[in-house]
Amino acid sequence: MSRWMTFALGEVASIERKAIQPGDIAKGTAYLGLEHIESGGVILGAKPVDEGELASSKFKFTERHLLYGKLRPYLAKIACPDFQGICSTDILPVLPGARLDRSFLCHFLRQPKMVDYANSRTTGANLPRLSPSALAEFQIPIPPLEEQRRIAAILDKAYDIRRKRQQSIRLTEEIISSTFLEMFGDIPAKKSIYDFGTIRGLVSAQSGKSSNQVLSEIKTDIPVYGGNGINGWATKPLFEENVVVVGRVGQQCGIVHVTDRPAWITDNAIVIRVTDNNKLHPIYIAEALQRSPLRSNVEKLDLPFINQSVILDYPIPLPPLDRQLEFVKIREKICKAKTRLVEDSATSNELFNSLAYRAFRAEL
Image 1 (cartoon, rainbow, N blue to C red):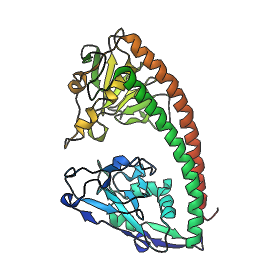
Image 2 (image 1 turned 180 degrees about the vertical axis):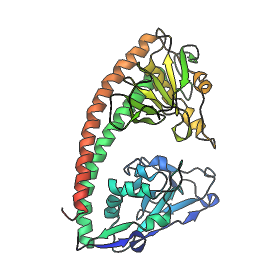
Image 3 (image 1 turned 30 degrees about the vertical axis):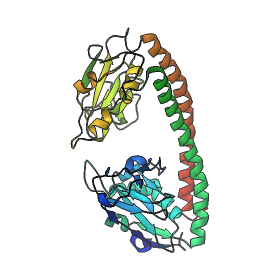
């Protein structure tokens, strides 16, 4: 890489923050928020804006921009749109200059080492953000433009393979959702062939506990579940049986998991334990809560928080246990297929990261 010159990103690209006010946003304009971009940069789909829907200013972007998610940069929400529109101000539109290929830059910034570096430059403990000035200081190796395009073409093909693996995983999740909808109805719309009821009296609920005293630096067989899934390993379990875990604070509000082994649950989550096994199955409860509007409701609050009563009193369909068990068996088969796809995806990710590492060391 000695023949490659290195420049600060701000020298070879422009970080453009062309704001547009809500009253100037035309109906139907494509809008991207961070929720529309997956970790790794896949765009899930832009949302057409309804008139008067947005209440704050947004940034403009075109199909020539790279979009860099500055909020929680460790999520690597770095995308290359093929359309123009507007985006959340937590996304920075970056316009590469004449000597920088957009796809080359995108792959460079998505590297694990660059994602880690970006995360180390953030400010704000609860909502870490990367400032535009910090991003502009990133050092970018610049080979000749023709070489950039050659590298980008190789990485684009590898990235596409990885993306298709991820799409297959999403498809299994969609199959589970459609199966639930077909069997039990639409919970948000409160449409079901079964009577709606609450789970109060059928389950117990409690907050998890601080994991400070049980965290292990070495991976064990005891996962620590926070509000957003597994985030560590413990020296002892808090629960031996399967329990439902519901995120109760901040961005984790309303996220639902089921432990599949002895586990520790942190105080960022509420633990739901089935007390009447003749009427409820924990997997059914988890899937039902996941499809309830709990999360969308708390996201509207300035300080998102969910308590036990909200969960216990939210109405969901209460089908017979045999119908729940039928769904659980179908879901189990789909999850087995998903596990194989996740393993294949992990292999694809490792190969892609290895290829990118070699590419930016001029070894391709």
